[in-house]
Length: 174
Image (cartoon, rainbow, N blue to C red):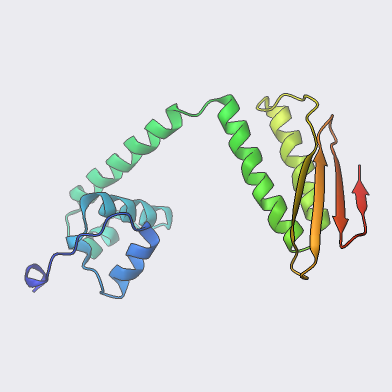
């Protein structure tokens, strides 16, 4: 019987990890801490699960799951209020830089260049980034082939200039 099972309270685990524990019956869904349950409910909704299916997983009523979903929406609304034009532009550029680094690591230079140009261009068009001359950003890491990959991004105007130095050679795109 479900109520005879030991109570397990886990906090601080990513929701997908908790979902795996629930699916493998290592953790009982009903015994989750409310904060963790709400995170798992949000994860399941993002994956397209319906309220009845989630309610069945947690052995709870549909209305209880709806309340959890309302709490998730309230948390998300609070996060959206703190986002302004500069923060959105900066966060988007930061994420595009991560994608560029991944593309360079995989030695896909044309993709890195395309993301760099298009991300900045679109943000400028939307008014999230002001075009100003910035000092060059120099980066270096080990590529998928094991050799050093150095790149420098210079943003003066659109399109930007990006110089890539791979294993002592160089490439430039304008």
